[in-house]
Length: 61
Image (cartoon, rainbow, N blue to C red; front, side, top):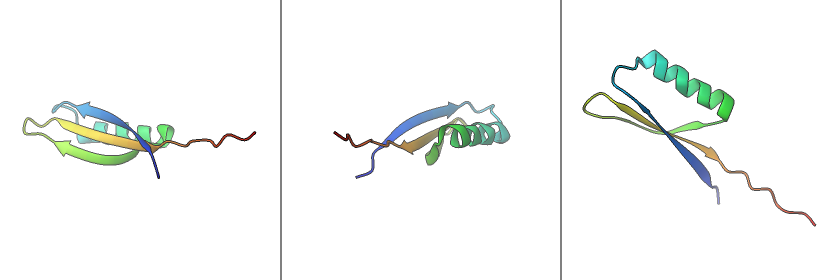
């Protein structure tokens, strides 16, 4: 079974699409996050859920 950890990012309405895209690209490139969900609310705010796999190391002894 695959386990994920999540991070939620919130961007106010005055944040440009280019700035949001750059922030998501940085998280994906350097933190190995992938896009899980995006919501745009009525006021224009964006909330983005990112996820990445949790890698469990099996103990050897």
